[in-house]
Amino acid sequence: MSNGRPNSVKHNGPLRQQLAGLGVRAAGAPLPCFGERLARLFDLPDTVALDAANVESRDGHFSADGKAAERLRAELDKLRHGQRDAIEASVTAERVGTRNGLPAPGAGPSPAQPPDFEPYRRFYQGKQRQMAAAVPPLRLKARGALTDHSPALARLARIDAVLDATLTGYARKGFGAVPGVLEKRFLALWPDRQQSLLSEAPGHDPEDWMKEGAWLHRFCQEMKTLLLAELDARLEPVQGLLMALESAHNHPQGHQ
Image (tube, rainbow, N blue to C red; front, side):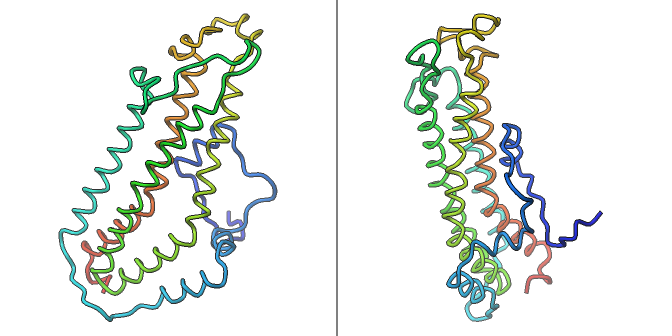
């Protein structure tokens, strides 16, 4: 049944699904349609820049490189697999306490107080910085491939450049909120002294917390899953540009 909003878009990507699984829900009234929410992020200079980017121009030299999409796909796969492997490796037991691994478990000030979350915040933010440094160069290269291909794809590349510049701050704020969600989850999973005494789960020894099924092991696995979902979200713009390029190669008459 129609909801009366033809522009409504459901966003159920991996990152949103994982956050919803941790109990994160949108607050307040239902959100407006996607187009309206996007428009709220644009001020007048952004709108002018977007209008200018949306004008197709046939000026310039275009050459449809048949291997461009293949090379870009290989680079995207390499980046994705490299980042995923690094995230997976960083949460293994062998890396705990090392520079690139999880923080070593440490007890709180007292048995009734939770451990310090800050080392885990720094760990997550470090992985975010690595992703933030790795993805933009490939997105820039993807725009270059589109710009060289055809007027239509060059226009798409210009639009993506404007969206990138306009939404970077918004995206940074959104990704920056994830560690705060993790902190709440960390405290929710931590068993207090009384709960530990009444349960069969590992209790007061921090080394026991990382055993299979223990609360900190569960938290770290959830943190890893969020990192992988965030990686996918950060790569979505590159994936979209690549799909446009692949479509142009497969259906050249539709992308003149």
